Every structure is written in C-alpha cells, then in structure tokens.
Length: 116
Image (tube, rainbow, N blue to C red; front, side):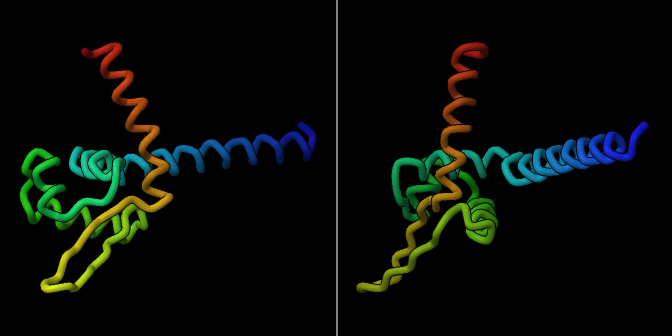
C-alpha cells in the first residue's frame, strides 16, 4: 500500500472518530429531557424563570436552575438581569442555542409521523 493511501486511510479514521466524538458530546449536552424542553420553550422569545418552570412541566426549581446554568455556561442561552424595583431575570437563546431549534422541529415532525 502506498504512503499516500495509508495517509488517506488514517485521515478517514480520524475523521470518523471526530464525528463520533462530536455526536457523543452532543448527546451528553442534549440527552436529558429538561434541556431540550428549555430550548424549545425559549424558541419563541425570552422568558422569566417562573414562566420557564410552568412551560417545562413544572420542573423542580433546583433542576431548572442547574440546566439553565449549564446552558448559559455552554453559551446556548443568555441570562439578563434588570433592576427596576426588584431584580428581574430573563433567559433567551443565543445564536448557538437557536441553531438547535430546527433539530427539535425535526424530532417533533418525526414523532408526529411515526409515533403519533
């Protein structure tokens, strides 16, 4: 086998491993139900914590806080604090977070077609 062919095969294997790692990393981020519900709930605009809690099947506040912090750290959502009379916190999707919305729409479409 020529050196060029060996190099091409090695590059192909590395590419497969990288794709697999990316897929694995994506599953780690989006593999829990609450995270996907949060992103879906923010798809139509910013929400306050209490709104998100109601929209996300009355998720436990500790769980919601944990997921929001994780998504903020990963830059999928933005947290804004405003102080008028009291502190008001809102959450919204970043461009990176909004990129997940078409995937969620595809999952919904698939579920309606094959599971509904």
